[in-house]
Amino acid sequence: MRIVVNKAAVSMFNLAKETQIAMIPWWLALAGVLGSVILGVAAGYFPAIWASKLRPIDAVTRR
Image (cartoon, helix red, strand yellow):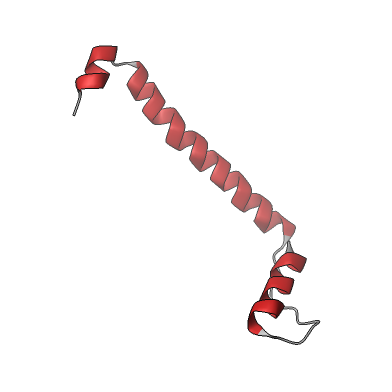
């Protein structure tokens, strides 16, 4: 991850070749991915539970 960010920054900002601009620890990248997954599951789960309790005609005509 760090290598990709560093290479992108060097090419975008015309920096010296071996410039180290980003240090992203593996645990921080993993925490970001896991947090996104948990948020995505929660954002889909709770509306689905609410919708499953409705009658189909109410779901279609509800405003």
